[in-house]
Image 1 (cartoon, rainbow, N blue to C red):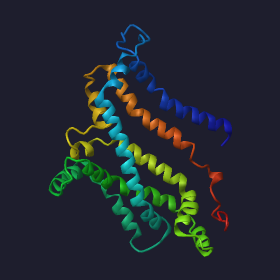
Image 2: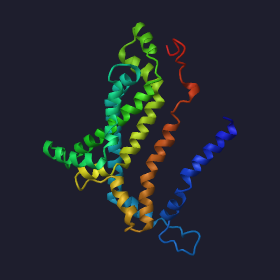
Image 3: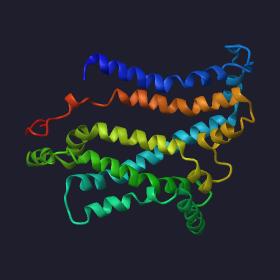
Image 4: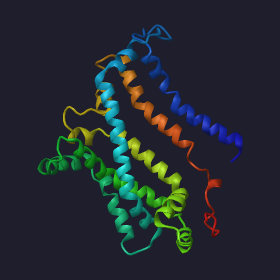
Length: 270
C-alpha cells in the first residue's frame, strides 16, 4: 500500500469519527440554536452547570473505576487460559472456544434476569461487587477469545529457550511473553474497556438504584433530552471523550508489524 493511499484511508477514518462530533461540540457551547442561524451563539453556561453537577462527576468516576477493575480482572483471569487455548492443540479445544461464545449467543436480557435471581440469593444484588461479577461473566470469555487468537501466532520456542538459560518464570512472562503479544493485549483491553464503559442493561439490572455510571446517565438523556440539548450534548461529549483519549493514548504503544519478532528465527528475543 502506497503512502498516499494510506494517508487517504487515515483521513477518511478520522473524518468518519470526527465529523459527526461537530454538531455535538457546537451544541455543548450554546444555550439555544435558532433554526434560522447557521451557527449558535457561544456560551459556557452548559459546561459550567455540567461540571458542577455532582451526579455527572460521580457517574464519571464510577465508570472509570469500574472499567479499570473489570478490565484488570478480565485480563488476569483470561490471560493464561487464552495462552493455552492459542498455543496448544488438545481434544476439546474447539468445544471450549464454542462454549466461550455462549454468553454472546444468548440474549443478554435473559442472562441478566437470571443473574438478578441468583445474585439476590447469594448477596451480590444491589451492590458494587455484584456489578463487577456480572460484567466479568460477559467480558472474561470475550477477552479469552480475543487473546487466544493473539496467541495463535505466538512461538513457544522463545519461552523454551529462555527457560533453558535459567530465566525465572516471572522474567519469562515480563520480558518474553508480554512483549511478543503486547499489541494484542492492548487491543483486547481497549475493546473490553469500551464494552464495560457502554454497559447499560447489566449495570442497571444488578446495581443499587443510586449507583450511577455514564451510560446510565447518558442514555436516558439521549432518548428524552429533558435537560435540554446543550446539557445533553455536554454529557454525551463527556461520555465519548474517555474512549477517544484511550484510543489516542494506547495507539502510540501499539507496535507495527516490522517491530514484531520474527517467529521463523530462533533466538530473536534472547
